[in-house]
Image (tube, rainbow, N blue to C red):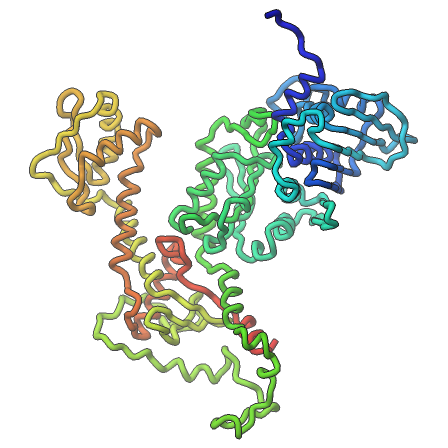
Length: 605
């Protein structure tokens, strides 16, 4: 079969298969063009989930008639010169507009600031009509109708209108976070409007617009630098988590990306602080020399490749963990909101008039409350009388070691306050200067024990137990070489191995913490892990998992009554222990309720 040159239309339709996968892809490309043109206002209108209509209007610099004619041609762009090592714009490939025009009805109307009139052009299924003059405001209006009408097979793979519209909304949200100085407006056929007013340099305000106001109250600022890379952004406290990873946003030199390396680093940074199946909320922005990152991996430009991926991963993990150590132990405000909703009973909401009815002596055996006298508040003097009472203990148990402080362990001035009561033999109620804290005693002590065991695990070699008869494990020669290359690391973790002739490893000692174990199975698992990843984290991970299990079974149990001194000592140890805001399984160890919230429950504010 003879080789022939494909037509320009067919080439563009082939390219559209990768560049324009769905309406959201077209929206992304058009919004990027608007931002590269310096727009400060971008308006997006859709119908039929973007399949019937997608219109993007901007107030950018616009295009001259000559540039407009070139813009719809393949590989014509004003954004790069002769190299891909210094890309500082969102678009650069020159594929989006011709790809869209080959599979849809594309019209572009544009005008520059110095032009007396605008220009318009129409491309239908790859066929271009002559350029014509047109009235227009400064900027550009790109209208895409009947997307994929020229490639009907692609339409069969489109999702519902609602799903496609949601994908476009997600694109707008990502762009809005990346460019807080730009106003974004998204409107749909159902007359719903999503608007993000410009916030200038206040990036956190824009994040609050997109992620909700709760993010502002539960976010920790990140600003770290390593070698030639800088990481900025905000990470949510561990107890502020979600059921999916949709609220994890990453940007590289201002470009929204969905990079597996970055998402993996975020997951690793929150390890042991978030329950399985839950995901942290984070917005991270990486700035580095454009020559150190390749954004030309895929036509969609959502994947990137770093020259030094280990540097980027280490920067993300280290910065997030430092931020969590600095301020991640506090309880999420959403916990207090849930408590507020629980306190508001159905009967209270259904019959609010009962809460306002006068309290008469006939209706109650207690002294009636006079309306002209102030009711005692949570943090007022009448509450101080309860400070001298201790929770009675039904068991004689040795008290926990107390952490001494100038103000004593029962001072409300401490971050977690002073213990006032124990409820249901499991929950400690503590009074702080501006509210109260409810602590899950078992979950809190479980974390304290685990952190103590982990510190011991990493501060000195793990005790080992010698095997009466060394266990011989037959392995491939390559596996033996890889294992022996990490023999010193294994020895520190309590696993002593040595060569036993060709194709065999002798296990002399195993970690005492693991007790009786399948040494052969462990060595084979480590060999497989080294062969695939060239790491030796399996044993350390198993030891930490065992330490967590031992901590769970060795902690203060639910149902145990504690004395006031014990409860206060537990609170002080929590304040001094990193990560004490979550148990080993990632659940919160305490919930904080502010005095203002309590007063709202009683209608006092």
